Length: 508
Image (cartoon, rainbow, N blue to C red; front, side, top):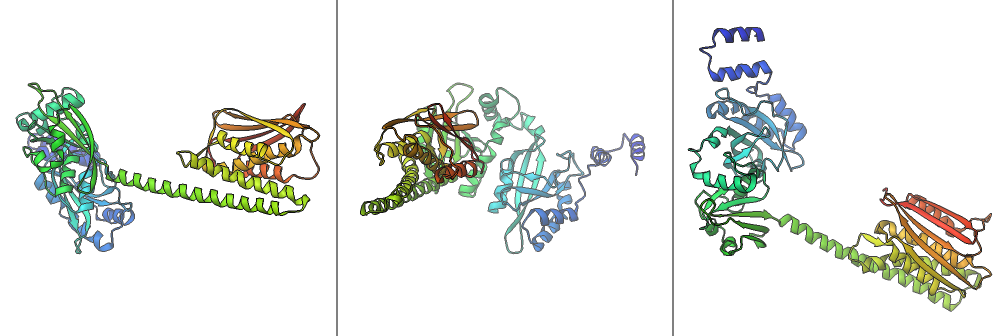
């Protein structure tokens, strides 16, 4: 049938056409006919997006054959959702819109994701196998619906999907006579969260925390979807309006009885950790009651415990690495005391200083509260003072540190420690030949993207040699490969300046 024929038929039978038929004709004209269940599409979505086996998919297809009849009888939209492969969210694999009433949705929703944040009842049903009935929700098109969710089980009793029925209740919400029992609560929530409004507030419906509103005696006047899910998860039942929340949840007794208008506390119960907030409304003719907001912190606290355990373990590893490095350094010192050839002593000393420089990184880490960052200023002071004041040089050398205080992640700190060791040790060994004293400056600079470490001396100046230096080779290679930076060294009128530049952020 063409659109022109539909329009002609519509004009001829305008007086006799039913509202339902008009909606159905409208769907045909716009190409949005949601009454046809696409079995092949169910097969495709379940195969590509879920972990369901073929027998489970057949069960889903079997249930879908009755969806249209359910939708027509209940005058509600009916859906089937299945858990995605990541087991965090769900996907709509089938839908049926009623031909006996106007559909809630204007557009097709098969293939869209049902996120846990916006569809808590669906995800809860898929994960627990418990049904959720008469649950209020808000659609992606901002319509208020009454939602019921029941699990679809395979022959082995395992949840493979959720059958969802959604009925538009916007008109009921706007009708004050039908909402007389909840009018006071609606007014209170609107006044506190959204300002005065005749409509039910949207904020509580979207909150992840469980929100209860009770009167001064503890009787339940309102609970949002997250609160309904929490109670159902803890007790397997639904609280009715008028039930005494404090009697059902004795953990709230002390909190409700305290006179503070605002109270925040954390308690452990039911093998879980909860953060509970109480907001008591001022006593007057309009508002007499309090909000109880409960947030489940169990997963967060478990992760915090895991992080603490890992942090302790990493610090213990750092401590052992530092001790092992110091043991190696002690062995080198012992060998040097027992006697080594004079021409080999300088190599022993250079190796000893490199080991102690790496050990300094772990000393700085252990002295700080953070196991991920190292204070570059403090690290350089340790290395510089060790080389200048406790070294084997007979010259009187001094060293100063100035500039910005920089921090670096521990992963790059070892490379920087070795570079600084080589630069300062090079000054001590070669900068002051023929002099009895000398001075070294270490300067730190930074801009928005880079860090600079400058080592400057007032010695005899830099002399380029035909033969390569192991120390400078180490510096150049580490600057380029470990730090993704660059290194420069040049002679001055009075001394030498070496400059290391590297990015603030690690490049992998």
